[in-house]
Length: 77
Image (cartoon, rainbow, N blue to C red):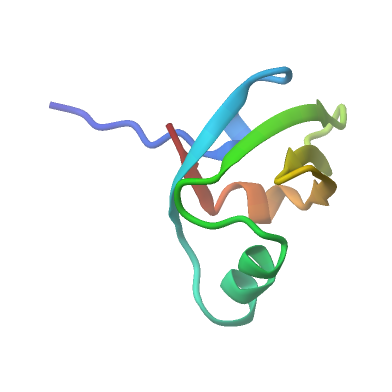
C-alpha cells in the first residue's frame, strides 16, 4: 500500500484544508507556528503565484503569504 502525503503546496486554489502535521524543526517550524498554523487549524488557499512562490492563504481570519518551502512542510487533509 502506498501512502501519499498531501502538503499545502499541493492543494488546490479555492479549497479549505485542515492541518494534519507540521514537518521541519527549529526556527522554520517556529516561524510557521508563529503565523498561527498549528495542527487542526483550517487554511483557505486564496492564490498561488504562477511559479508556486508565494502561496497566499487565510488562517484564523488573517491573510498570509507563505514561501513554497514552508508550504511543503505543512501536511494537510
